[in-house]
Image 1 (cartoon, rainbow, N blue to C red):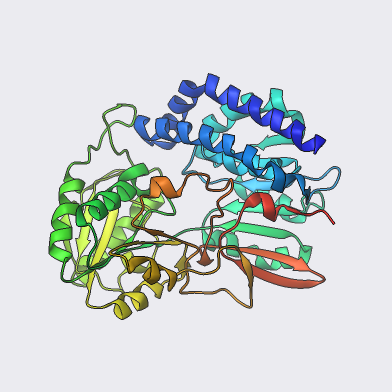
Image 2 (image 1 turned 90 degrees about the vertical axis):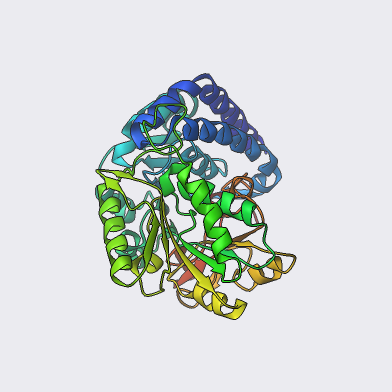
Length: 423
């Protein structure tokens, strides 16, 4: 317990340092990510609350041993679509006793250098920041005996390239990947609440989050009323300079994502869909866009969008929408709005509460579900005490146990997956 108490003291020092540099972190995040001043403000406040939440994990962490032995460190590769919340991933691995080697995305170098200046006086070399390119960092992590575990946030195509190397080296590989999350509106739902929540989730960070809803299914009996409300909320979004406190939504950070969105919209129109709002793209500025009459063979219903574009489809009955929701290679989370039957409906789509062994990649299940609940509430303590992750290509764990390669899927905590129970 003494070692853990020492880590708690360092955590407190980090919270104090982030709070003292709060405004600087917000401004650097706006510049690096293109997220709005308002979004980055909220994120910093949220991360300070979440870091405080690690204190409640004291009993759990004190009973665990780090995966790292002397001279080793866990390799952590972080995504570009984040700033303050990335501290949760770093700290969760550290709090169970592991040294950490951190690789931020290249476009987040300003955030990385600012955080490094805060971390180094507190953690010394226990938490190190690496500025090599991502492929060089991962190649070293895979082959280096001093790296027993790798945690990667990124695309499934990128992560999948390392399967053979991870098998050969016997490393543990924890992957958090994309989503193509369904947002389902059943009869009996509070339509205004559901439409407002969809707009919030779609346009915060300009849709650049893995848990942003991307496939919207609305029962045909309420489709038109829901659509009218959602269009009203979408038209009200203020797009502009991210540094302006009045701005709701900024640009897309990745040119590659913008090109993918263009392809999805072109494909949708060619296949008979209708753009009810938006479709306007100027450089990296993608304006709120709503596509209706979406079919499941469209790119926009199959490939991750990662932007402020919604593809909406009407459905006739629950069996139909269950089948549609399951028809994806991604299974991160599902949102359901409806009457008192919504909770039982959501249970039919979700998997086990914590990651578990599977014989192969499992499709048609989701790691977590939100039922008539805003995402802002659901994400409180995520990665701290609340497991996050999914099925299909939305995430997995590869590891070798007793000389046998295994796969695990479902929600997970990085802290528990980079440690093991004391005997």
